[in-house]
Each structure stands twice: as C-alpha cells, then as structure tokens.
Image (cartoon, rainbow, N blue to C red; front, side, top):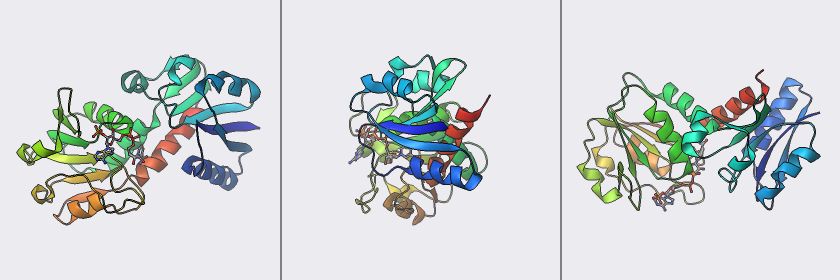
Length: 247
Ligand code: NAP
C-alpha cells in the first residue's frame, strides 16, 4: 500500500495525519498516513529501507534543516530558505520541497485585492518568516520587505520600537510569523503601533488557533482587513499531495 507520513522527534497532535487520513477515506484511496518519530535524523535512511511503500513525507521540528544532507535534489525555494517540509521519492531521487511557500502564496493571493503594496512587513524571523519572505520577494511590485525581530542584525531587519517611524501608507501588508497569540497564550500579540493601521492594510496571521487571534482583533479594530493561517495550513497540505502524486 502507498504510504505517506510525517517525520519529527515528538509527534502527538498532527494536522497532517488527520488531513490525509480523512482524505484517503473520503476519496477511497488505498493509502495510509503514518507518524514516524525519529530520535535522530541519522535514522532517516533506515526509515526508507524499512518502508518499501513510502512515497512521500512531511517534515516537522527539529528536522526541517537537518534532513537536507540526506536528499538528492532541492527545490529553488529550499535552496534559498534552507528548510524542507515535504519530501518525495521522484525522478531526482529524494526531492526536498517547501510547501509553506506554496500554501502562503496561494492564501495571500486569495486575500490581497488590487496592486501589490510597495512595502511589506514580516513580524518574526524564524522558519515561517523565511518562507513568507521568499514569496514576497518573488511578487511583482513589492520593493521593500522589512522584518521586525527582537534582535535585528541583517539589513532589512528592525526592532519593534522603531516601527512607528515606518511609512505605513506604503507598507500595507503585515504578516505575523511569530507564535504570539497561539493557544493557550491567546491574549498575547506582536507589539506594533496598531493605531496607525486602517482600511488599506491587510494583517495576515500564520497562527490559526484560535481562528481570530489578538493580532487580528487589534488590526480589525482599526478597520484593517485580516486573515488567519488556516488556509495556508490546508493549502500547504494540498500542495504536498500534488507534489507526491505528480508524474
Ligand atoms: P520559529 O522558527 O520558532 O520562529 C518564530 C519567530 O517568532 C522567532 O524566530 C522569533 O523571532 C519570533 N518570536 C518567538 N517568540 C516571540 C515573542 N515572545 N515575541 C516576539 N517574537 C517572538 O517558528 P516558525 O516555524 O517560524 O513558526 C512561527 C509560527 O507560524 C507558529 O505559530 C506556527 O504555528 C506558525 N506557522 C503556521 C503555518 C501555517 O500553515 N499556517 C506554517 C508554518 C508556521 P525573533 O527572535 O527574531 O524576534
């Protein structure tokens, strides 16, 4: 039977397992989705040997970067971001993809109306922020992408205290990639000057639990459009399925 699955160190509540198991049942597909807990990434080659039906994997913490040396081919997004969350056994051997990139781009394109803004602001500087930055850099029209981080180092990075000096009339897209506001810390939110936001801004949160985060509430209270990360989560899973099953 075709097997798909998720590798990580400790796997308990998995959206992917639920998503794909329900999909296989609904569509009558002879396939299964398993959770593979690996104590070290050194066990990755043995997993493929022990699972002859294995067609594709999702990858989660802490192996998104550590798995790269075991792969034969990397997508351009993975080459730039340095993180893999989807692996397929394909014509290049083991291929590394990043479906957060695909999921975020599809969700953003559905949410954004009109011309792309001149500037965009990413809150947080972790793995998801790199996927978001990759998408924004490749959109036509966005000339400047800033990242707000608690410890700015590189060009384009700034601290939260300096955000009130930003030109918010041109910076009309704000993406929260920090875990602030995620259950159970539902009252926490990124420290940005919300009072400057208005109807021309879109505030996107990658957090999806709760469905309306404190960040979204604060932005919406100023008239901004808001979206959570649920569509991105679903679209990244759909993108993985498309990658695993393409010819
Ligand atoms: P990560 O690698 O740990 O990065 C999170 C970043 O947020 C950190 O690098 C940090 O940046 C910032 N941060 C963390 N705690 C903070 C705090 N208390 N105050 C201010 N900034 C803080 O995590 P990730 O993998 O990028 O994931 C980030 C969030 O996105 C998670 O909530 C995750 O569930 C969500 N996510 C959603 C989807 C989806 O499909 N919707 C996909 C991927 C991730 P600095 O240290 O530079 O400030």
